[in-house]
Image (cartoon, rainbow, N blue to C red; front, side, top):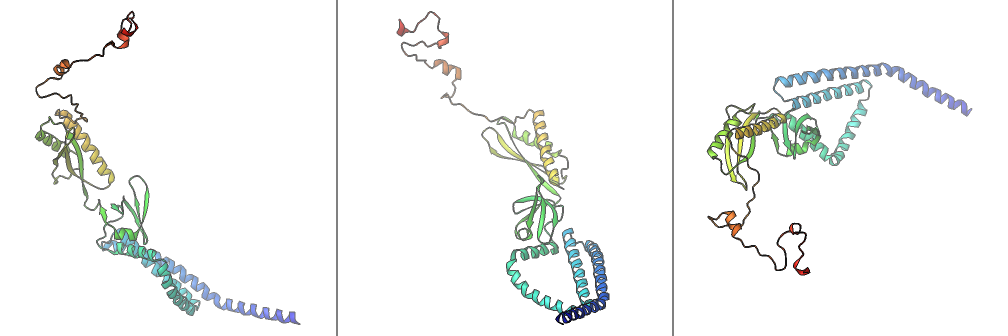
Length: 322
């Protein structure tokens, strides 16, 4: 009897579930259709938003972030509509209420994450963004080309091929040097010439040599300044501005400037001296080194042969052995 009752209860429950599934099945299918349509619309919205942002002059990083926000908003709206079709509105309200309370607790636990996301939004939405994707920048002691800007991080490619991922909070708060923004960069080349060279001639030859560096900005004057009296040379710095699109342009300009300076100095007999050391023999003014050395007496100890041991005749014996 008890087994029959249990069977009847299970049968009634399964029948109720089956009837509910049959009733809910159309709504479930409609909810799936809503999600698929929302997914497709989110992709279209992403492309349209990116295109519109490009037309208004937004930078690439801002375009991607704005388009991502729009896509997420469309997807979220689709999810809410699908839950409404399934008549789960009350559950959604309960979940959102619980999420609000949980959000306060999680906010304290993930302060850095939230700060990075907010900084990423600030970087993207700032009309005067300090850099764009593809720019060579230096920030937080890292020099690299901007590859991507996400909500939480900024990715840089260093000149040596290393990839650096920086939290947006650090980028937002630190100084950013953008080497690409101006479109040109100054190349400084330091060198030294002999004390015996004519400095005016050196200055003229150096300017002419640097003026021929490929990619030089024509409206920027080539400058040569003498800086100091070095140990072996008079030191100067040559400055020339070149067009800049990447780190390779800068390094190539430095290399070309060095090559041209060396060739120009060789052609005009201008010396780039090696390190020089002065030896003090105590010579007074007007005296010759040879005369001073010749006049210096040589003292030989009594009982010793002043000649090296190998130079003494074979038959000679030291005085002490006689």
